[in-house]
Image 1 (cartoon, rainbow, N blue to C red):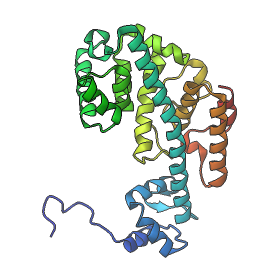
Image 2: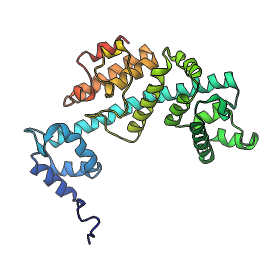
Image 3: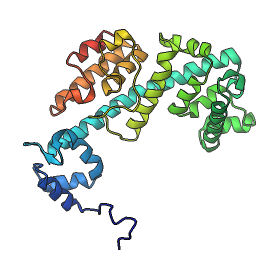
Image 4: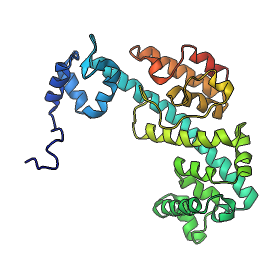
Amino acid sequence: MVNGDNMHIKQPKTYEEQIDLLKKRGLIIEDESYAIDILSKINYYRFSAYTLTLNSNDIFYEGASFNHIYKLYEFDRKLRLELLSLLEKIEVSFRTKISYYLAHKYGSTSYLDESNFKNLDYFNDMRTQINHEVHRSKELFIIHHKEKYKSIFPIWVVIEVTSFSLLSKIYSNLHDNDQDGIAITFNNNRFYIRNWLYALSTLRNICAHFGRLYNRHLPIHFKLSKADRKKIKYGNTTFAAIYVICKILNDKVLTKILLTNISELFNEYEEVDITQLGFPENWTNILETI
């Protein structure tokens, strides 16, 4: 029974009905059994997001096919996995550098001293989040400190249970001179590093929760220098994110591996329009010359 509160909500469709709807809108379905199998594993709503470049007003362009859309989906999935690997390296590196810097300048429990931070409200929120993560953690190193050190944790321990998002907030709440002290280890300044940490933590959440990269603007713009803006037209694209990732890592070997892997993805999925990810034609040269 449909009550008054949800009478205007769309009603569920069977997999077969979903296929019929796509066909009515002009999509070529090469193999209906195969398409039903795919939609039984990938939510129609998630899948349909990859149709946005192939239709207008819910009518598909001539030649658009189910297999084409599924290849866009698979490309996007593999690209996310590629980026997650590099984002892990960046997150671990920032954890290391932030905890090392603060421990050596202010002591083992520097994160407990509000005078080391700009904003008291943000400091208290950080403490609450850290306490929550410590309380629910089953990591052996946390249990060890609970038992042996009466739950007094040095910063290099608690930093390992912080999320990338909280790590970004911790950095942003440090005093400017401390932000500078950490940023310089990445050959940059706090204005860019602060923004990049925030933007990359958001990107990491998109990738980790299977969000779409293809044909979308990222929610946080990457701030870029004048020189970088000559190479990167927009700061809210996947390519801008990749450019910043390579700048932070500052590792020619990793950049070369990334270039190779992305090139192979583009070759494997010829259906992909690289401009939908913000890639310019000379993208390989741009990354190679960072």
